[in-house]
Image 1 (cartoon, rainbow, N blue to C red):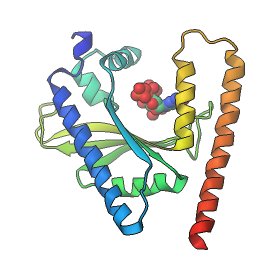
Image 2: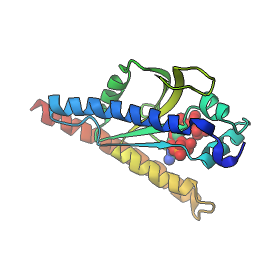
Image 3: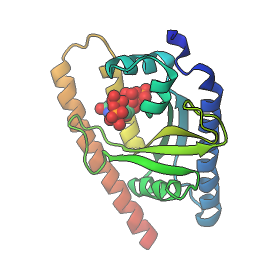
Image 4: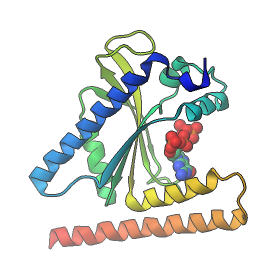
Length: 205
Ligand code: 0O2
């Protein structure tokens, strides 16, 4: 399999699944805006994992670099990131997403309640989406996996910064940077809690 063709003929289908699910999320947000006057999230981004990044992940997991590995064994070919103003909004989004009739949750990781050792925080959800397209195993309607990451703006900024460091080949003062990043992650987590508390006080008053 060519490196630049790991999704094979399924690439356009992945784009459709990603768009349809993004539309479903946007739709409940629009409903909430009408009902409550505020959005449930600040912004949403969606991406198909790059071919090279997916091929690298297959190699790391000792999987053949094929559409079957990319779409039936690994779960993050399609990724949607929902960035929220407040921690509670993350759980509000989860509540809405879990009600989608065409989706079931196959995995959940709450890196907010249990942050990674480096300070990474986010809520990860793997959805299995049933859609009227042929999947890599030949089923139609097919089943497609989507990774949804939910985080606050603070968690998102931190992850971008940490990502920059991780993917630089050589970083001077790495030990210092790693420990500063951990300290920063904890400070931002504390700010997120304060933001939520103040919002609750304003809403109750
Ligand atoms: P991209 O380009 O964002 O997709 P994996 O790490 O993927 O082999 P697993 O269990 O699938 O293993 O991953 P996990 O822990 O659920 O996290 C997957 C994604 O979460 C990563 O995707 C990142 O987007 C994000 N993530 C997880 N841990 C960290 C972290 O410590 N720092 C940052 N900045 N992001 C993290 P990819 O595949 O790295 O890349």
